[in-house]
Image (tube, rainbow, N blue to C red; front, side):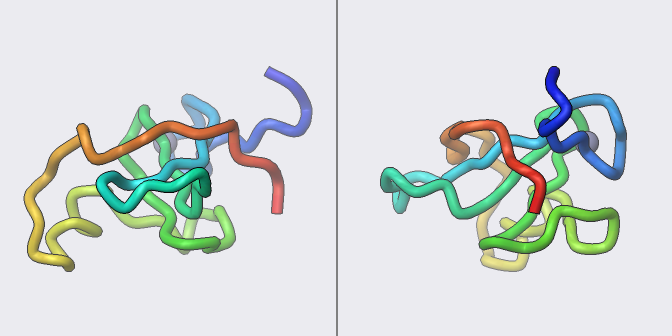
Length: 80
Ligand SMILES: [Zn+2]
């Protein structure tokens, strides 16, 4: 890990990654995700301990079931 890694503010166990969701995935990775605790930050949210939600909750808000296969991993998130 380097100084510029963003460590998950919820679990402090892993870095946060930029992700896209398939099938809408493009070359952009608009969201952020912690693979350790399943916290998801939607579309450019500031990554802090107030703005995340669980991936399951994010999908349920959209009437979708939890499916990790939707996540396409991008680069490590950078500090905002
Ligand atoms: Zn986490």
